[in-house]
Image 1 (cartoon, helix red, strand yellow):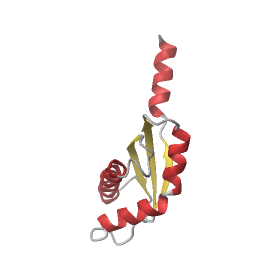
Image 2 (cartoon, helix red, strand yellow):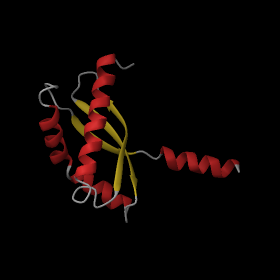
Image 3 (cartoon, one colour):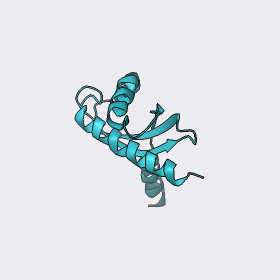
Length: 111
């Protein structure tokens, strides 16, 4: 169960990562629209799992690989933005959020 502090940090990280992906869409996201759907932070605040939805790209696998390759730069930028608020910037692990595809498949099966 997440503490109130964890939930607040998750929310702040989600907002800042969304803004980073908006600003760096051409370089990091290869022109695709990337949405940060969920952020889960470990209780010791050293690790964060970030779930992403990728839309409008030519190749979602390539976009995800580009994001994963730029993980250090993204964490550095996050550190510059949150350095005054957080003592330790968590390590980032990115995952594809396929909940929309799953819901669409369920909807299609029900019809």
